[in-house]
Image (cartoon, rainbow, N blue to C red; front, side, top):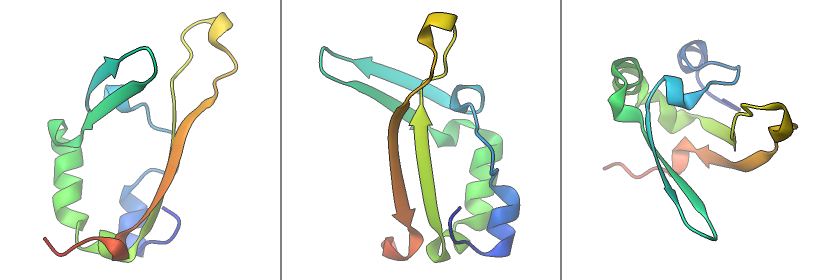
Length: 94
């Protein structure tokens, strides 16, 4: 959370989170890309947090970075897979 109301910052962790332990992931791989679908709705806790704080997210800026966790020595060092930022003020009202 780059910029967010206090209540939202208290709920969203500031440390790395291993997504596959919290929500369901599905992978789609081809020769030139890897796609990962993150089903946030598969977690009761994530769902409850989202419903409680979705109004506050309109006033926030989130920054996310993704990497694939190393499972063996030869997979180190881990490298950044992707990153992005989102401003809640750009969301539509639907």
